[in-house]
Amino acid sequence: MDYLSFSKKEWEILICFWNAHEPLCCSDFSERFGLNRNTSLSVIRKLVNKGVLEVESIKMSGSVLARRFQPTVSELEVLQTILGKEQISDLLAVAIHRLEPKQLDLLLAKIAACKQKLTAQKLAQ
Image (cartoon, rainbow, N blue to C red; front, side, top):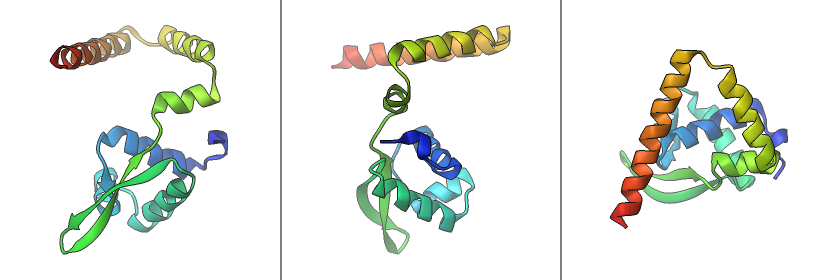
């Protein structure tokens, strides 16, 4: 997949789906992220055709059936397609060195929370 050929709007929609952490129908997606519904639907169709989004389920939304979409690729998979693992590490190192101390503290707190969540999930299995 040539992710570098994605339009700005395709990237915006895909990143929103990654941030949603759950499948969404077009109307819920547009409402949650404040995007035009027609534009969202058009871009979602393009991403489905490219195989980056898929229909996860079809459920009732009000009085109509609605398709709920989810990404088929993760952020890391996309990065690894564009960059190698070593390049990703180098890029992260550069970005981390440019952070202000408060930003670095926030990042470290997020990393610690993610690590704790993953550890709890592994123990639950």
